[in-house]
Image: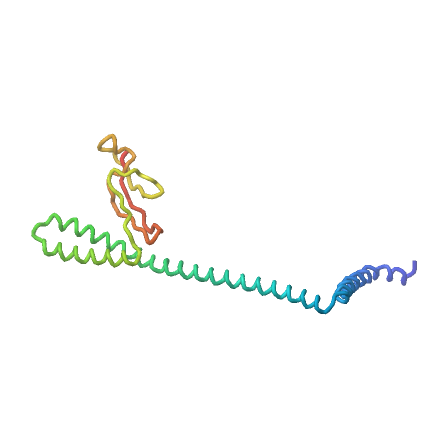
Length: 185
């Protein structure tokens, strides 16, 4: 074999690739030539319609996603404010329990109670609600946070809530603070 033959053999795969590409393009061209102009326009119309429908569906999904994200943003923005207000509610509740004992501070109790009720109603309008937990309710680890266990004063309170140390709150359907409870063992 001469050098020229070796070079020709090395170049053969490239030539074959070009020939294959050319024949594929020729086949498409021949198919298009065999179709009438109306059929070609129909094919183009179908392709453009498909592109349009996909783009339209993608845009609709984008609108739904951004709307959902915006709603979640508003919920989480108010959640931070509500979380910062919960200690204030707890302080009001503690103050009210201590003022109840003092009979001389009746006017003070009425003022604090008025402010507390106004704060609770305002936060309630924004979606905050107290999780109702009572003594004797069954303890559920998914809904309550156990702080401690003490021996149950009676047999029927074993595994149940003895005392509520801190109330829990929900913002809409989401629990933002679980009630802290003492359970009997």
